[in-house]
Image 1 (cartoon, rainbow, N blue to C red):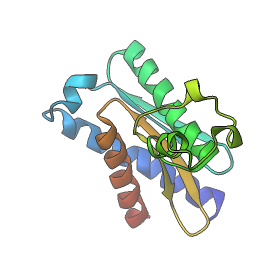
Image 2 (cartoon, rainbow, N blue to C red):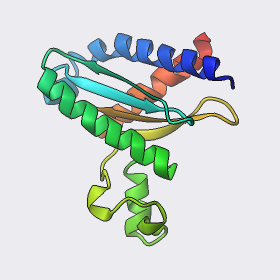
Image 3 (cartoon, rainbow, N blue to C red):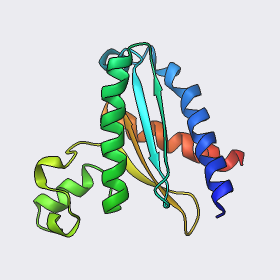
Image 4 (tube, helix red, strand yellow):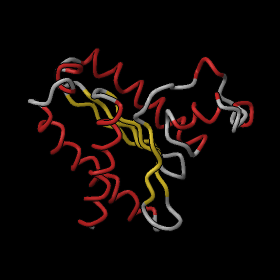
Length: 150
């Protein structure tokens, strides 16, 4: 995939997320957790970082973006979803030292995932603000839709 095509897809993912976030307004407990303040971070295979913060509370947005970035960067480094990576570490299927992330710095919850754009192109995504399962689902849906749109 060309860098331009990858960037086009990532921008479409961000647009799709912008359309989806408000649809959670009546969805408890998702909206009750964040009050509309959520964030996404995407890291491509070249290390370029893309992100967006939604909501009116800049301090909450900053905190959620920090978590989204940490989720995305852990996926970028390890290649595993957050939550899944920790399970593999704590069941001795992987050695955390092989990845360079000390145990206290592991995310420990869902919301970070690799998204395959084509057979050779993967982006690392982190979303924060809703429940972990929703954080994963909203990005997956936005990416699937973006791939169909482009």
